[in-house]
Length: 138
Image 1 (cartoon, rainbow, N blue to C red):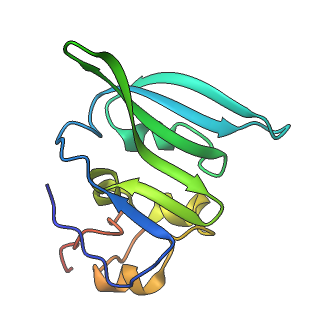
Image 2 (image 1 turned 90 degrees about the vertical axis):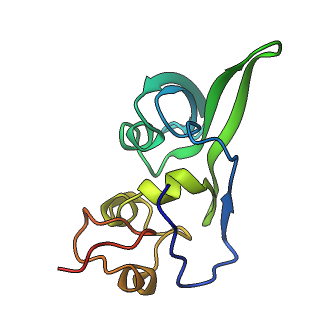
């Protein structure tokens, strides 16, 4: 796991850590999003990573993403890896390490993830650079 660099303290950005290296990897995810009429809609999808799930949706409409894991003896259980309430964001540490400047600037610029000082602190020069992990200096 890459080490996160958090340059600016932000009370609206809550980082969670479920301590499972495969929590944001390949598997089943449930996405709760808002449709055009304003109703919440739930959809189930399989993807290689949680970032792939986020990129396949309208990011502005996504309210939460949960990872569905099969736990022996218990059955299927859902773990929240991303949640949003207005500007506030709750995000899994592994997902935050994979999010790029482009992901944030394109549709999440009005959330707690967006911060130009954060981008400078991690040497982010393009939209393809990671927003919360140190990028190699060019």
